[in-house]
Image (cartoon, rainbow, N blue to C red; front, side, top):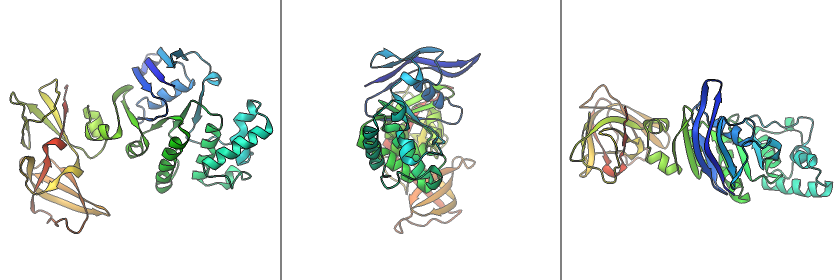
Length: 352
């Protein structure tokens, strides 16, 4: 099974909320569409699900155009942000509702519902009502209700946003393990970067109705292709740079030697340096920056340092260090040199 969006766009009158995009969703993968509020990510899910029709383009499932197919005829099921459980029905009745509508025989329906409840870890709760469940349990009921009808793709519209932080983390791991267990394609929409990195096989980063980058979580995190992606995955230290004829990059903090593998189209570039990839102390073959320490905050497993570079004292660099006792303490207002390996520096075109 392959889902393909072929030049799909969406306009509301003169307002273009989704520019033409082409995107492939592979069989059995967990693909996450990630972006800030208003970026167009939920529009993509609603177009695929059949809740709205595209202005242009085609939505193809194994080559068949579903663009005008009614929502009830599409082999997809959706898990909504508010779960949408029937309050007057038990867990068992909620999960089996779709099968009942399809006319599934009672004995078969009971068997399938029990199997689904077992998969999501709710086999002990078939007679409970939604009001008697925790937020995480309600979410599992919504998932069981979705997978029990064996859709080809499960669409998830920010389904964890209503949960508290710890429960949300638990549900992220549960969702990922569930998807691996049943092997169904999941298309997940979220605005939470950490959530997207945690659960996804691939990410689609979207902004202002257009796709910025598609890749694995590691590719997106360490090798951003646009300034938006580099900034959206927070805490990146960004510098404007000028590519020289020799391949080195001039920045406000000094010259970065020629980087291998850079495929740049413009001489104006952006340098992105992740805070956790810095080390304290000068190193050969690295980009070294002399700084003054502004502050150092303890945050459990990490120390967060804010430093002012000597060559650009109005700028602040963020560095994350392990809080292991072997890491040397630094004095606030004291001097420190930080370094980052050249291969850990991401350089991208700056079209402006």
